[in-house]
Image 1 (cartoon, rainbow, N blue to C red):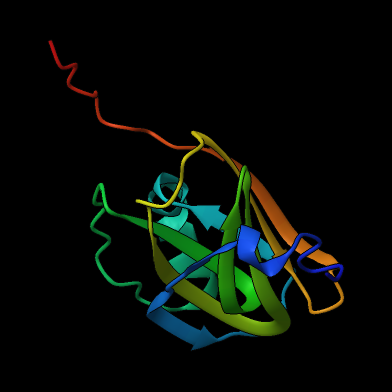
Image 2: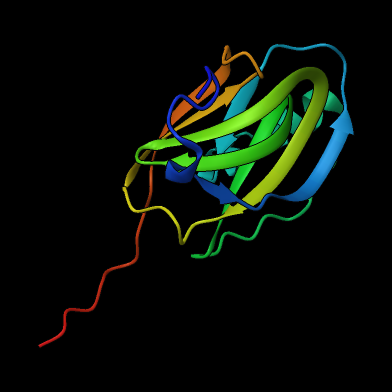
Length: 135
């Protein structure tokens, strides 16, 4: 156990991270946007950093995350927490992770360095499609 992952390793679900976009940027503070927030801020991000983000397609199976000032290295899930091991760097990252492992509707995303210091965090509520009840 350590400050980054305070519980036994077997209690964490490692999540595969697909990098959709990355770009070196001027030094900036750290931030994290999740799913629809990215669409809301996309134009401002593109203007501020002089970049063109790819077209975002939101699916029920993948969750899109956008990091500023953070290089994500790995993602693990436990309970309400999605812990992202990260390094603070002047960079922008757009990644996707699988949704099927989340068993809670409320998630706390925490990007932490290897010493467990929180670089950025975000509370997020998953939107699930209506479930069909069996009769």
